[in-house]
Length: 317
Image (cartoon, rainbow, N blue to C red; front, top):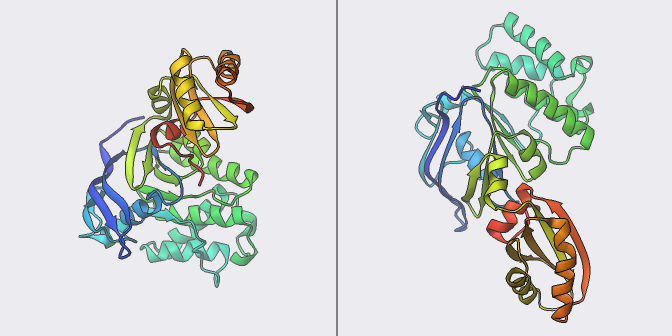
């Protein structure tokens, strides 16, 4: 896919709330045309605040943000014409029908009546909502409402589509249906910036991912590149009684093919070259030093593995 340079750019972007909390700390970021770009991290990492600043809903404390080359602080109205936003909360107009939510959105963005009607009809077909055109918004399921918000967000043909936790709270079937539509939009060249704490979504759908912790980017690459960066084929998680920090140190020092050991909550995570082969060795070392292993599990390297290695915490918080 062609990359025509950044359509989103931030320079030392920072947001400090009146409480003193620094939600975003000197963020430098570029997103290219046609990408699905993911901001991945736990709740409170700064993902939503970053999206809020890029979509003019949150005013930065310092730094700059550009969408389509337009400064979002200096020219917010011009920036809004280039973006579509699907937020975490339902922002549909409950006094309008499903079809009317699209039609009047188009009219607000300058479409004439004929074109707005045609686009509303087309998008309801594309987003699998044609049979609900005359329905009241309050009658929609969560998945349907999310699809309608996405349809409304692209009604005016934005250059960039912002999705803030788009599948949070949806059932698996609704998540799949929404991602089928988003994948179709991406195939047509739509640039999408996605915030999520679902690492499996980011791993499957994103061209590149920035992992954010405490308002800072701690890693940025393709999902495959991020997984390669930790140099381990998989992860062994060890539960045991006793001093887990001491156990982590022993396992890291005495086992071959280990790429770091961290303690998260009540488990030791080991990055290893050969996860299955490492299991008996882990038990042997632990028992030799007086630890009783209560549980062992193995998994392939994932984005969550990368996050644990970089931050010492789990993505889901």
